[in-house]
Image (cartoon, rainbow, N blue to C red; front, side):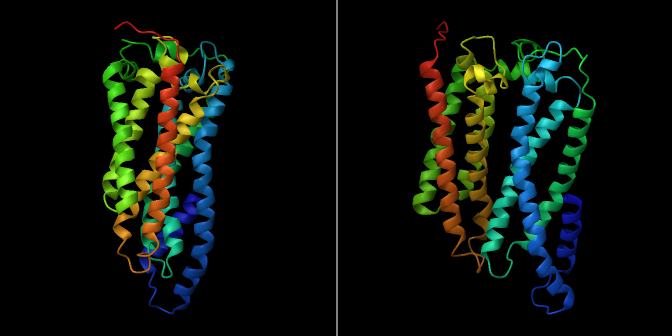
Length: 313
């Protein structure tokens, strides 16, 4: 579907001319409704597939010796973690494309049609690469594999990137998390009231995504597990911990896409056919982003308050 849509997108970029009444132009206008609708469903499925991929990796960990959660399953071969990282990136790109398509559908003259198809063409190689990585990951899984448990992957001083991230100091990361959260809420509230600072809100939302992931590895996870040496971001998804990871990650992605979407649409506020609708769309996305970040902050505060973990100092 991506290949087909990309081929059509290349046609749009080369031959689209709304001033023309040619048969080719009329055909492109009719066809774009179908292609855009199909890609909308495709990218919505892309977002859902990220969580389904992680859920599946977690559910099948029992087939592999040494695996305790999705961390071990993804380590069973060299394709698991690259596939996860690419799926996460593509999930963000898919969400932002859906924002562009939503705005384009609100304009009477297809104002963003070339922009959204250029975005699609840029994302297509990443989606195809993800398909290859994911297929290799599942096809190369063997039940007799011995893999690593999350305790060794995210252990302090393990010498890997995951270990280094898990070793980030607790107090500075708590300060960074709550400072980023406060900045996001403040900038989002300011934009909602004044319509100014959309790009700053988008940058702060993107920063919040990164800081939250680092915070989960550094301190959120250990307060959930009540174990200072357990930094795994995947065990949070298990029923033993009330599957608290799902609302955390859903709120994080929702806030990130909503906040970054505000900045993405800012350049189009002066487009004639969108000048009346883009501010309204941005306000709606701001509300979604603020609700998601508030929910994320509330979950983290609850985790810290309810945990029985007591750390020295």
